[in-house]
Image (cartoon, rainbow, N blue to C red; front, side, top):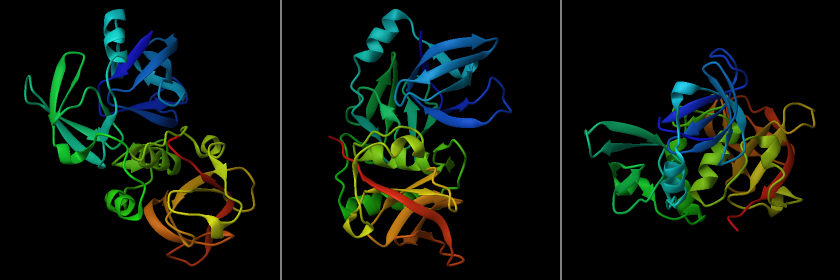
Amino acid sequence: MRLVALHTVVPVRSEASETSEQLTQLLFAETCQLIEQQDRWLLIRNDADGQTGWCDRKMLTPLSEEEESQYLSYDFSALVSVPMAYAVSEANHQTFPLTASTRLPNYKEGRFNLLGSRFLIDPSMVAQQPLILDKDTFLNTTRFFLNIPYLWGGKNALGLDCSGFTQVVMSLFGVLLPRNASQQVHNGDEICFLSEARLGDLAFFSHGQQTDISHVGILLDTETILHCSGRVKVEKIDNNGIISSETGEYTHWLRAIKRVSNG
């Protein structure tokens, strides 16, 4: 069975409990496959990135065969390009907050529709095709993400984790990534030296002297990185790792650099 999220974000948890760890979130209009059910909890797999976890049944809407066929025919090339936008229902004029990277089915000239429900949205907050990865566009887009607080499993404007941040931002430029840093590191071409890195390359880190990948950020150049640690911020980087703007000490140790593309 395929289900769809009709809320701004839907928490996906490690266990069938409200108090369990949040692994990620489903965004509005994202679909998932039902794997298992335990009372009011559903074990699902996100169609977008394959992440699995438990959702409260009331947060998801099952699709009939006809609705699923209709959904699969939609054009999802347009997506919200700012941290937060508001769609308005044409039927009852209610507003729906939509977070960055939310894909808008059959978008055209400030309108989109989902399973018969039609919405209006400010066209200036929508990218109808992937943004061009150049310095001006990247900086103008990501400046609105600065200071969004860290939230484990978060993928929205009120809370992001490091890999949720890279997944959301890079999707605006047409790059689709898996959910976690330990998965994202297996994508793209390896860049052997920081001196060869360029805007948009992903840098992967461990904490302390551990070797496991536990953090990721987006390089702005060979000396600065945009990442989410405590909050979304820009900090210095060198061959050893990220240097805290507050203390001047290393917070994350550089392990790999990857160049990803939308090809």
